[in-house]
Every structure is written in C-alpha cells, then in structure tokens.
Image (cartoon, rainbow, N blue to C red; front, side, top):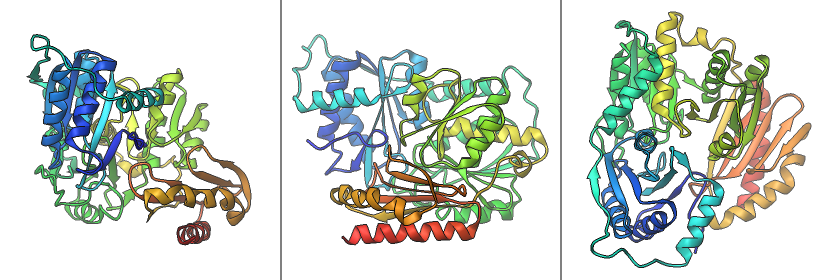
Length: 456
C-alpha cells in the first residue's frame, strides 16, 4: 500500500487516490485506535459530501458517536475537537490543493494533529484490513454539532479582546477574500464584530473555486491586490480553501511576504511574555531569526507540516508557524488562519499607524517561491541529484540542512531550498537574498540544477 500521509494529512485526487472506500476504512481504523467520541467537519469541495457520508458510516459502524459540524473552516473543526472534549476529529479537506483533490486531516484530543508515530500506526492498521463492526445494539450515533461556528466566533473574540470593551473602528476597512470556501461563514463575522468595515470577496461557497486558485500565492492574488489599492482599504486578507492559511496585502496592493507576518507575530508574543521559543519551518526567512534573536528568543526549525511536533516537545513556545499557517499555542495546537487574520487586523486598527509602520522593524528581503511539475515516482531520483550537487552549484556555503529537501545557507545571508512537495506532483524551489541581483543569481543556479535533474 502506498504511503497515505503526506506533509500535512492525507491528500490525493478524487476518486483514484482518495475515495469513499478509503474514507470508510480510515474511519473504522481511527475509531478502533483513538476512541468513541468524534467530531467531523468538511470543506466545500464537490467530493466532500460523498466522502463525509462514507466517513460517518465507518465511524458509526465502529461504534463511534459523531458530532457533525458540517460545512466549516478547518480551524472551527479543530477547535470543536478541543471544546467538546472529543477523542479525535476529522476534517475532510485538501486545503490549498486544486479542486480535483480531497483528503483528511485528523486531530487527536485537544486539537492536536497526528504525530508521525500516530500516522505510521494508522497506516499499519489500515494494511491489516477491517475489524468486524459493532452489533446492531452498539452502533454509533450522529448528531449535528449545533452552534459550533458561533462557539468558535465568540471564543476567538474573547481571546482577542480579553474582556476589553469593543471600540468601534468604523473607518478601518478590510477586504477579505474567502476563496469560495467556508471561511465566508466565519472570518467576515469575526472582523465585523471587531468593529471594522469588511468587504468580503469570493464569499459564495463553490467547490469549483471559480474566483481563483485555492493557494493564496502572490500571482493568484493579483486581482485582490488591485482591488485593495483601488478601494482604499487599510488591509487585504486571503484564505485558502479551508482557512488554515492567510495571506496579507498591504494598502498599496503589495503582497506581504508571510515570513514577515510570522516575525511580527513572534515579536508580539515575546513582548507579551508568552514565551521565548519560536518554531518555524525550513523554508522561512532569516528575518524571523533576526527579529526573535534581537528580543533574546530562540528559533527552532523543522520540516514543513510538522511544527506541531516540535510544539509538543518543547516548552516556553511563543509561536509556531510555517508560511501562511500560524499556530498560537495559547489558543490551540492547530494552524488557524482566521485567528491570525483577526489578530493582525486588531493590531493594525488599534495602532493608528498602519501595517507598514508595524512591520518597520522586520527586514523585507526579496524572495522567490517556485514549483516545477514532477511525477511522484520521479521525485526520489530528482532529489538524489539535488542532494549531491546543490552545494557545489551554489558556492559560498556556510552550512547545509538536509532534513526536508536540501537548504544551502550562504555566508552572505542568502539561501536556497529545493524539496519535493509532499502534497502535489511538484518539486519546489525557495530562495532569499539581501539584494535582487544576488537573488537572481542564486535562483538561476538552482533552476539550472532542477531542470537538469528533471531531464536526467
């Protein structure tokens, strides 16, 4: 059996890689391993209803009592697992992947994503086949989790406002692109109750994602950037398909590199005395290190999709984040694009100085993030060539990290990372430098190596 769990949960093309049969088998396995109380939520992909029915059937067949959240952003489902005290939860979603994909994100008690050892145990159990279902008198139940969205909204606001009065800031205008996903049910409401004026785009839920691609990359958000600038908005926000991610557009319509948002959020958390350790991933900017170390903190890097693993291992953590996905440990151990967006809006609105001023102490180094089509079967061969040759191709090497692809850090502060995507048939290239000229030089060398490896 092929490995099911990728960088973040289970994802694949429906119905060849992710099917109702897989949903049924997975749910039976999860119920046998993690307990009899479960929460289930879904995004708005066209295949989500059929996968949900199969998942619910397997859970009840195995004696699970299910609280069905229904259509909801991923952060609401994860929060509902914690709030309800359920043994585990499942979100049916493919996050930022194209519409033909779908998948499953599993949360343990408290809203924790599965640890690597949990994923391995689930895959071993799936390979052994199904156990017999419960008898007619012991089948599980399924009830709607009434009020899950309202609970989440109220509790996010309580966290952000901390009992303070809600001052109206009606002249502060925010544009939020909901990506035709269930973020439309939550983010505009939270922002409105913070007292800001909200313009919601792509707020009709549609699994075709007609407004734009689900991944909130700079090229995908070009029209949003123009809209933010021309409407005179103070801020633009964009979610992915299930709202665990958020991207930021400044008032001039410029895409804000998400690493700078991570650095700012880390700075705020350290200044509030919430910890000194910041966990982030191998693909993030040196600007995070510079900001955190300036405040006496420490940056720990890990694999993409695994910030929650380090979060569980360590104490005194102020923030855990990878690009677009920010975890506030005081709220919960899941990536929450709605909370991150709302916290940023609150800070900017209350500051009275604007986003640019808030980020003035965070370096803005030029970056490139590219992807190259690559069949999953070819990834090991391509990456073997990259591992052998990237260091010599780039030169001026300070050190090399190989725990998630290959990242070469140069003595002048520039770096390049090449890795195989864990969620799509792609090879990814990330790079950063302190000047555009140096960035172009590093990227050109990396691209030549990738093209040669793909042709080999």
